[in-house]
Image 1 (tube, rainbow, N blue to C red):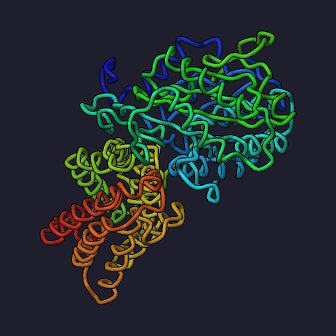
Image 2: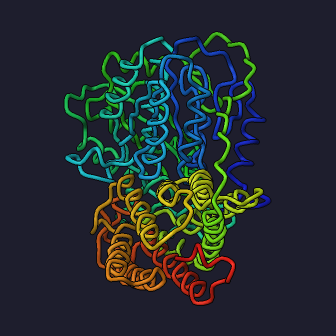
Image 3: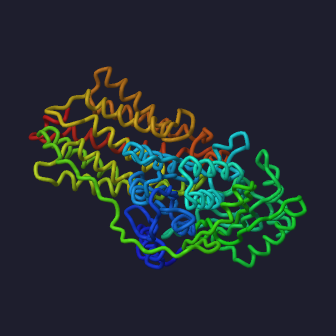
Length: 585
């Protein structure tokens, strides 16, 4: 159980600050994560990795010569926001382009993808290689849907060594893709991990049992088995990985036994010895193995086995030197420290002065966001428990972080002389939500708020048509970015019925308040119906059976928010303030 902290909400940031203080010879702090503090040759490809905090040595511990150039660091088990990834990559870029690499999780894909689009638009050539090594998360014929666990290390190490050797972006990407394809992992857990400040682990494993196929974000395994002996566990892991070996695999493998947090090194060594004997008996040669904590999950009691099938080129880069805070191999010539001031922030254009109607709508937007915050706070623990059934349990705290930041940013935007338009308020709120929450919900809610704000603009007056435009823009942003469809068991299953009911009521001549009431009721009913669905997207997908009978947390949180907004707007429209009726349409 994580016990050392002041405020659990500050745990990730303060831990990262302390990590930098302890490793200034390797890393420098930038807004969003860390980059190398030593000189980087001009024109070298920058490998930028990252993900949620709580996995040390991944991801910041792997920044240094021969490995990553930078790491974007999100909150506990939550993806870094797109802006964080962008700033870290911008700071790490040495002129040779950027390769982003991270585990295949929905929030990371959304945020890193947004950052990649922005970097490419600015002329910084950027590519992505997802790590998909976990054989428990999808079948071999769906390998692209697998999530990344301890195989992160093999992909990062070989890509980083290739960049250090001066290869161009095409070749670094090619080697990372090949490494990922030839890497397989499988993990087990004996007990769940506990987020800072939480009183209970994210999941429990029954006494005398072992959970097979766990994730690294506190997700429980896909099946439970009687607790094996060390020899039985070694046999289980090796047999399943060898049955999944890549096409064209040779007989030289890297074997990595990875502790997830509380399994002691002596136990890991004992297991590795048994694993090595089984691999040799299978006709394999074990090359430069690793045994220890490499990709953890806070205090989870568990471990994983990773196998990378080498070829001559991959073996060259796996054996190449690296020097980082947490991973060292061979010898590198010491590098000079560099003075690092961080990326220069883009100048913000002077905000357009809002019209009276737009400023009043901006004030209303702040009030609505405050209502959203209140309902999220009220249901934070409930949403976390619901998410923990088949996910990592962070939906409640993630929504809380996002909406707290959104309200603060909205209030600050509206506090300027003359106020601020709803467009500016919602844009500020959306950017803050994305930055602070991270994860899938951060990306989706942040983008949706910004889209709704842009749809409202800065007008002299507003009508029901503008409300329709804002709702449509909000929904379109989520569906286009998240790529989820009805029936996937996501927020979209409540979102689309909300939109359809709102548009139907509006087209029938209903005022905004009545349209919202109909839409909120439709969202609530649809969210309840997700209990009968199997998840086809996100972290809950590998645990579809566990999710059956329970509604989707994203759909539930959206329905709760829709109901609160409907009640607030209905009350306000029923009792308008005389001086502000012009913006109430």
